[in-house]
Amino acid sequence: MIIPIVISVEGVATNALSENLKVLNLPKGQMFPETEGFLVAIQDQVIPTNNYKRFILKNLQQSDKCRYGCQDSETIQHVIGGCQAFAPTDYKERHDIAAKIIHQELAYKFKLIECKLQYYKYTPQCVLENDKYKLYWDRTVLTDQYIKQNRPDIIIVDKDAQKVTLIDVAIPNSNNLTYKHNEKVAKYRELEFQIKRQWKMKYVETIPIIMSSTGVIPRRLLENIKALELSENIYKIIQKGVLLATARIVRKFMGNAST
Image (tube, rainbow, N blue to C red; front, side):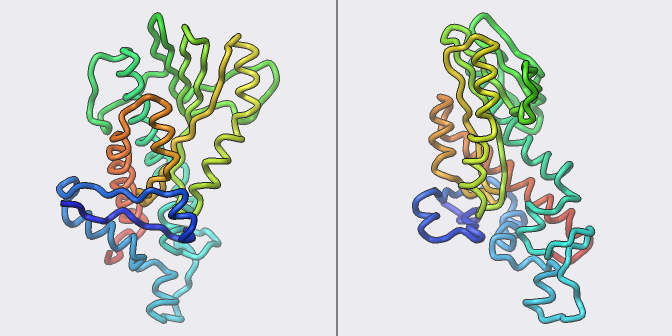
């Protein structure tokens, strides 16, 4: 049985949805019913944010601004992906969940680790290496010329093929999925050139891993997972981890408010 709890498309036009997004759902039993219901409330944008109280409940005495000091209106989109107070901590932790899942799958595929753990128990090593592959985690790449964008989440070095793959993860709101993908590709163009020259590689490419904060799956995510030669079903693990993290973020943001 399928529960359609992850089909939020805040701000996404219908044609963009049909062309760029693939709406996929989690099987029943993957989450507690309370969490499923809470995610539906997030999707339906009925969480009592300051914006909701002022403009939906018509409490004109209520400011719609973010309770943590941001000047932006406290919408549900702001809560799950736009508050600067949460960016270096909770949003980063959610991002790292997705990145760790990809890293572990690659490490296991390349026989750099012997077994897989639950994603929340896995801690990536900075460098893993054998005679065929080298896998970096969150490493700054030193180049002859200074490059600001020099720290992708994961770097794969295929020694035999003389190929480097840069992987960068993002968990934006649904309306930013296409923009974020294109941004990631453009972001590392200069680094690709420097790595190819300095490391004497034949091929260097960037593969973004992008999923929305409410679990919407861009079609390009499935294509990129396939390009990494990983099981397509890995999106389900990433999706579950992201959704649980988003639920935690909203609960933490709202504090003792009734949610």
